[in-house]
Length: 193
Ligand code: ZN
Image (cartoon, rainbow, N blue to C red; front, top):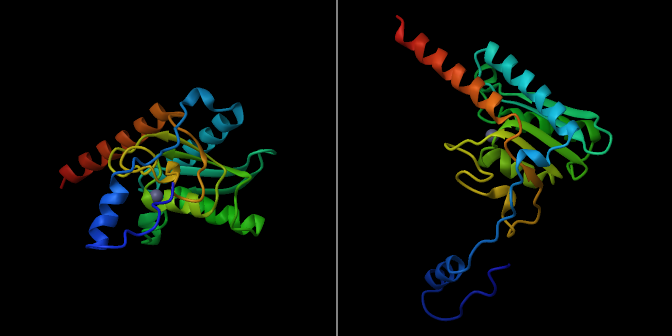
């Protein structure tokens, strides 16, 4: 699926752009929640607990767990900590992936699965690809920033050199409810002087 050699004559960059866009981008599918194992669901329940902890600390409720796909051992956990750390990269799954890589002393996480309560953003989807995470299980879709299937398909793009197996919609209702509740409370707080 490589774009092939650069066209030789004419305005090459214009031709190259046309060349690229005329070819359909092959995207790997996202499986539904029925494809999740009992272990996946248990890990997602733990990620939901972390999301609730984040909400209790005034953070947007997102939680994540990285675990060994075979043994089920937890290798890294994370919750959204952007406000506390004033860190734009302190997303739940970003933190969990870094923790797991430190624990196994390897940047390659092919043998790992990531459970995260919200569809990853472009930054985190990029990290999932770069860390070679073997499987991604996520909860609610994020129509505003999702980079798995809502806005972009970074984790399923066959032009990239790694694609995790992806299952979406696991405990999605719980995750969406937690997020909606958090933002409703925030709006309420802002209304009061
Ligand atoms: Zn993110």
